[in-house]
Image 1 (cartoon, rainbow, N blue to C red):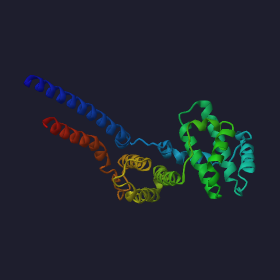
Image 2: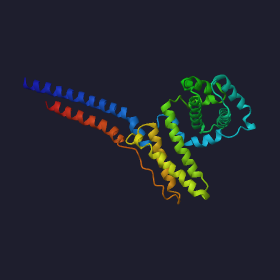
Image 3: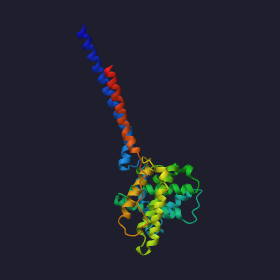
Image 4: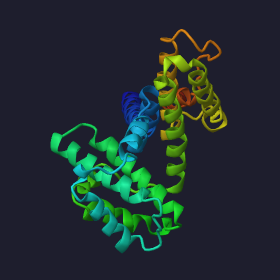
Length: 285
C-alpha cells in the first residue's frame, strides 16, 4: 500500500510539474511576443508607420516639387488641373501651387517608376503628406480618405503609390510636420555656404531648440514612430556636428530614450520568476 501511495504521489507531482512547465513556457512566450514589437522598436528604432522612415528625405522632395513647371511636364499640369476642378471643388489655386506641385510630383514619380528607383516609397509618402496638407488648408480633411484613393488610384503613375502609402490622421500629420521642419532646418544647416557661417550656425541652433522642445513628448517614451525618428534625427545631427570645426556653441543633442526598453524586457522575465516560485511552492506541497 505504501509503494502504491508513493507511486501515485510521484505520478501526481510529475504531472503537476509538467503542467507548470507547459504553462510557464506558454506564458513566457506570450509575454515575449506581446513585447517583441516594443523591444525591436527600441533597439533598432523601427517605425511602425512607414512614413516616418522617409521623413528625412522630405526636404529634398519638397525642392523637387516646388520648382516651376517646365515643358518636360508633358501635359501633366493639365491632368492635375482636371483633378483640381473636378475633385477639389472648394479649392482656389490662386498661386497655382497645387497644380505646380502636383505636376512636378507626377513628373518625378513617372521618372522614378521608369528607373525602378528605390526612392519611390519615400516620394509617395511625401506626396501623401503634401496632399493631406492641401486638403487641410481648405477644410476638406473630412473627405481625405475618399480623395486620397482618387488621387493615388485615378491619376496615371500615381497608382504605384497605393502599394506604399496609407491614409494618415491628424496626429500623424502633425508629427510628420514637426519632424519635417527639423530635417528641413538640418538640411539648410548642412547646405549653407561656408562664407555665411553665422547664418549657418543659426540654423543649427534652431535645430537644437526644436529638438529639445519635444523632450516632454518623448522622455521615457521611445516606443512610438515619432520618438524613434526623433532619436534617428539626434544620431544624424550629432554625427554631422562632429565633422565640422565651426559652430562651437552647438553641443550634441541628448537622447530622450528612456527606460521603456528595460521595462519591456523585464516583464517576461518577471513573469518567469513568479511562475517558477509558485511552481516550486506547489511542488513542495
